[in-house]
Image (tube, rainbow over all chains, first blue to last red; front, side, top):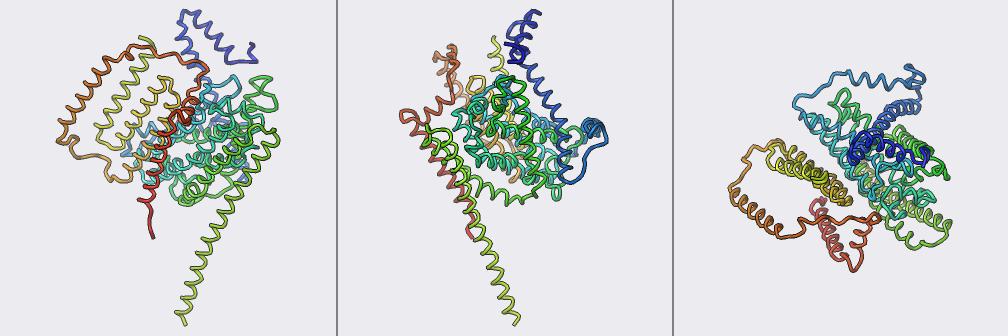
Length: 402
Length: 169
């Protein structure tokens, strides 16, 4: 067992030896090592987060046909550090009438709800926080804490824009949680486990090829959960200024902002883990855990890029359209897909892989096609109703004139 | 005292204090947030008992759905978040006596129960709690009938809610 094969265990064993050598009891040493592991993971994530600020700003500027930060350091790489210094030395404002404790707790909870997600992310077969057998549900539970932080921020700010933003965001998060949870059950069906590692191990063929529609619905629900465009009702700059975080200044705002970026990256990672094989890449993960980590980070960045691509391409959707889209289209579609997938999976069990994959893929395409046809015929009816009433009212006006 | 016991005591005291604050705080939103803290304490207790699934479900259902709905309802229906009226009504004495009697009754019942001094059986490493739970809920010799009846009840409640909220044009 060398460092290159199982780095975490080697380091933990070495530290255990050192600590017990100092006369520490074994339980205390193990607890201390656990804390050190958490500290290491969070520090690395926060460093990644600083880098993500640069990535986000560079990518958005390219989408908007400009260069982006390019003055501080090569390619503007030192820009995020300048941003951090700016955020730290800004005046920290607490609005009058704000609920101080809740107001200060909200950004912490917001950041926490993102960081705790990484407890279940397997970076490599052996490099992971904890292999919970309910990893999939854990994601939803962490999301619940994120929802709570937003409503706390919106309410405690004592600002009506913040409150409206929080209401909208929470309405969206609570409703899009349903298709998301349903889509999380599809990899669970294939893998026979809710654990993240088991889901990755089960992907001899990427689940994307078995359930492409599920991956698409998961992506849509994830974007809504993140509150990013086209679902960024909470921030709606043109009407709510900045939504739930309007009253926050300095690093408290920075916590929300950094939390959002890291959240988007994390969901890119979950997309990779659940549907694109996680750390697996043609057996590369067996060579060294470090290659597995690199693979996962790369895939997460691809997912993150897709989320950014959607954000900077699409326009904002109106809140009632968004909720109607979720409850009347996405949720029934998600439930149908879950039932079809479970049924097909049971019928096709034991068939050769190529037949299984192609039939599963086909069933997804058929479900998507039927759903789109139903939506199209419904929208045609609605349009005819509106146009028909317009035409008849025009006739009435004409008749009145003559 | 083992570490587990200390952890349990800390969590239990936190849960009880938060629960007490739910009913004594005058600010309704604070009361709802303390309720979240209480529910979280219960979730941690489940976690200490190695019932991971129940712990996560507790957070998803109670904090993610029910507490958020509470906060929504409070914010949308109350103009003033402070409760001005008296916090006790005239039934407080009867209520207190009933609660006391229930506590004493439970205390004496649990005194004669030998489970108090027993150690929890070690869960084997390969024992998948979620798998066993799923099997128990769906197998005919398990709890499939109560499970289905509960599901039907929930669906009936959903249909009822839609019926009440439906706006006939």
